Amino acid sequence: MGPRVGVVTFPGSLDDRDALRAVRLAGAEPIPLWHGDKWLDNVVAVVLPGGFSYGDYLRCGAIARFSPAMESIIDGAKHGMPVLGICNGFQVLCEAHLLPGALIRNDHRKFVCRDQRLRIENTSSAWTTGYAAGQEILVPLKNGEGGYVADQHTLDELEGEGRVVARYVGDNPNGSYRAIAGISNAAGNVVGLMPHPEHAVEALTGPSTDGLTFFTSVLQQLVAR
Amino acid sequence: MPRVVVDVVMKPEILDPQGQAILGALGRLGIEGVSAVRQGKHFELEVAEGVSDETITKLADTLLANPVIEEFTIRR
View: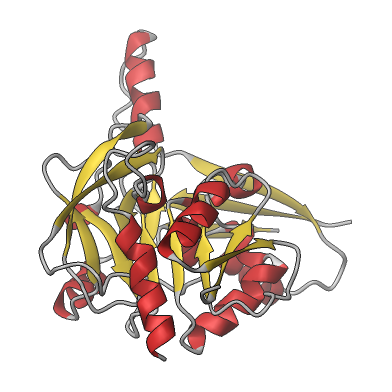
């Protein structure tokens, strides 16, 4: 079995199963984690899946951020553990201040669900080394509160340091500033992404298999260590 | 037990799509003269005597509001 990669289930998570499946298809050992457990079961990387943790009460991700599992994940992330937050997971990472900015309601006020073209702009993060710089990929996007916002200074800093991991190609689906679909922290081990690579890992169920590279990328990092 | 009220609203520079939707509905209601709506959250906390302003501020700043996009006011 490959490296142990955990996927956290919060009350209200939806995409934990698909994330576990993506981890398995990439060749790692998928480890289900429970939000209420501080113990991370010796995983070496963590995926925070999409969904509506704690019913999106208060703000998306605001309550999940204080769960026992997140305590350990925040600590691990600060020590270099790879963490990928997808959709609600991205919101949790912003609420936990592991990533700058915030995600707000789509500017057009409707839930958006479609296959979305993205451009991968950072190929040095723990989760994107397998992509070619500028590579365009097609993965599902589904969110009601996916508008990425941050102040000008933060946006300039993200761009200047090459921390915009992925950008929307074509129409901006949710009003994200500068069409940002995903970002990383300064160290590159923490990545947040609004679209769903875990739904694009098999031809039978996804619009492409473009998303699998997020999971194989981290695997290569972990094996190379 | 004293009651503390915390009101949270989006910062002025952050788009508030819900406020805009309400504004649109006001127009359909035939009400004129309202030019902007900002939607926020209102929290009522029952707190023990002696809970300091500092504690309430910390609580508002870390949980009730996200300071990246929101502002809050505290009333005792």
